[in-house]
Structure formats: structure tokens, C-alpha cells
Length: 462
Image 1 (cartoon, rainbow, N blue to C red):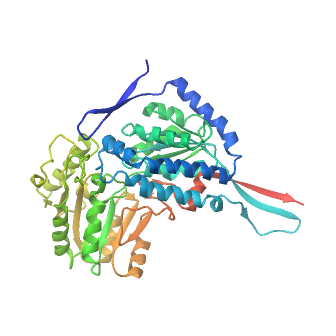
Image 2: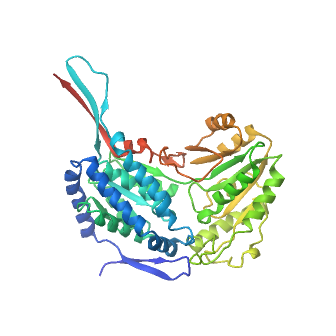
Image 3: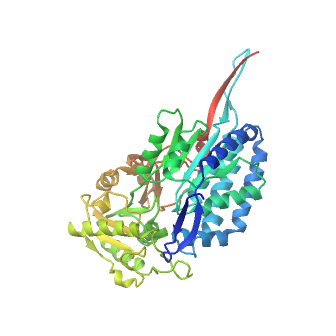
């Protein structure tokens, strides 16, 4: 009898599902099938691939409600939001990457030289291993799965053990789309098995989304192999509210950016710097809007803030809060305003900390929870200094009525994406990337196809 693993639901701490781990034989068969299928799949036309991928998207859209409920049970996001992961973000990214594939994968023509025909062709890498996280189980994985298949690769998906049903949904969608056997497969495997798969010479690329330590483990597993891993890692994303910002708009969007998905987003807003002229009014508005959240059972439609993924995650965030308070920070939200808040459970009230500084972990280490620290600053120079004072660099947002100033500030920020008057959103037309400990590589946009292909030059003498 094979080993199994259990998914403990943050909703009520019950065992939601129990799944068998893949055996060594099943892993071997999966790798063999992927390699065999890729030889055929790489010869198919982009239009053929697009037709099947579009049909797979149809599956997700037609099953959005039931998939949303599965997401809620597996990781705790409120049911009022989870179906939209399919109908909005997933759909937008998948359809965009399908739409641009022909152009993005087209031969690159160079200036012609008499007596020669010269061009550069983009070829699929082979088999892509996707290691996907639980927090946005479809939004993170679709960034690679659809373009990898569109580029002519085969894909093996290993989803987080908190969200295994997502991998099985992908398999069902591609089966519905009549994708040839072996082009997409999934494995439920342990970290140790993942390392073995990465080390297998039938894996040609690894796409990992997760923690910095997880990224280091992936890199270690690659070892001396000459393959590349795309790494989307942690974040401690800042926002800067300038003196000329639309205060109401900034408050509304930054509260959402800090608390949506219980703050469990790599590009969620975790620290905010507000110009001193707006600071008092900003804090008052931020507190008032935070108090309107409803923490509770995520299966109830009125719930706007669900549990964190597990009790240990809530305890970690609480330890950061306590450390900040010991160093002089002030908490503005009384957890008693949120009756569902309970110690030693995943249910955690949102929190706002002021009187904070960068000696506190809550302003420097990833929290991944509904907690935000807010500081007053005198102007752009100080805000830029503080925003850059981080080991991470995924996104940063600037709230201002002056686009020229936003671009000027953005040019000085060490970040992969610079927003103006919005946050916590991935535009599929733009490259999704990070700097420093937020990782390396790129997904989405036409550039996202570059990581999933290798170039071959044709130098033909006539």
C-alpha cells in the first residue's frame, strides 16, 4: 500500500482529502511518457495547441463555482472570492498567453545578406516541471503551464500538498480538451521526491513559486545540471502615498492590497510609507475600513476575511506583531472586534501597526498575513530609501496624481514591477519578475515565452 498525505482544511481543521503519494514506478512512468509525448507535441502547429488550450480554459470557466469551493476548503479563502480566480485572473492570463503565442514564438528575421538566408527559431525546451504554491493555486500555475504547452513543451505539475485537487483539475481540463497523453501530467510527491525528479535528465526546466528557502532547495537539486529554474520567491512589497495622492482611493485599494486572501500573497502590500501631510487622515481611514472586514467561516457568503492556511502561519505573524510591540510599535486594531479571532487557530484578525521602524521584523521580513506596518515620511527621498531597504523586490506601488514623479521614483526603486495608483495585480501583457530575494526569471508577456524556449540559428548559404 502506497504512502498518503492528508489535507487539513483551515476551515475547521478536518481532513478534507487524503491522497496517495506517487511511487517510484509511477514517477518513472510519468517522466518516460513526458519525454515520449514531447517528440510528437513539438511538431504540432501553434493553432492546434491553441485550440486545445482554449478548450481547457472552457472547462475551468464552466466549473468555476465547484472549483472555487474546493479552493476554499483547501486553503481558506472566502467563497465569495474563490470562483473569480477562474473567471477573472486565470482566464485573462491564459487567453492572453494563447493569443500572443504565434507572434511570440515566430522566427526572428535578421537583416538579409546576399547569398544567404538567416533567421533565429525558438524551439521548446522539452519537459517543464512546475512546482506550484497553495495561496493562488491556479493564478500562479497558469503563468507557466499554458505558455509551456503553447511553446511545444510537455508539463509535469507538482502542486503544493495543501492544494492537490488543483493538479487533478488541470488533468481533467486537458483531458476534456483532448490533449494527447503525456503532454500534461501531475505528480503528488514529497520534497525529497521533487529533488530526485529535478535531478533527472528528462527535466529540462523548473518553474518554482514559493519561499526563498524553497528556491534555494530547487537550486541545490539542480546541482551541476545545465538547466535553469525560474524562481518566484518572497516579497515584502511597499507602498508610498505621496502628498498629492487621492486619499480615498489610496486607502480603499491599499486596505484591499494588504488583507485580500488574508494577506497571503507574494505581492500583497506589507508596509506603507505615507507623506506626513496625509498621515493622520490616512491612518484614520485605514483603521475605519479595516474594521468593516468580517472574519469568519469562509464558506459563508458574508465573510470577507477567512482563516490563514494553517495555525502555524497565524502564530508566526503574531510573533512578528509581538516583537514589534516590544520594540515600541502600537497596534491600532483590537482583535476583540473580530469574534472569530482565536489564538492557536488559523483565524486571525487583521492588524495595523504604527510607530514602526526597520529594526522590526514586521517591516523587513515577509509576514504573509493580514498585518501591515505604516510609517510617516517627509518626502520622496526618504520613501525611496525605505522602500529599497529590503532583501526583496517584487512590486512597489506609488500613490500620486503626478505620473512623471511616479516614473521618476519607479526608476529608483529596486523592484520587478512599479505600480501607480493600484497594487497587487498582474497584467499579463507585462513581464512578471522580481529582483534580489524575490527571485529570478520572467513569466507572462511575450518575454515569458523566452524562458520556455531555446534559440536555434539558421545560417543557410544559397
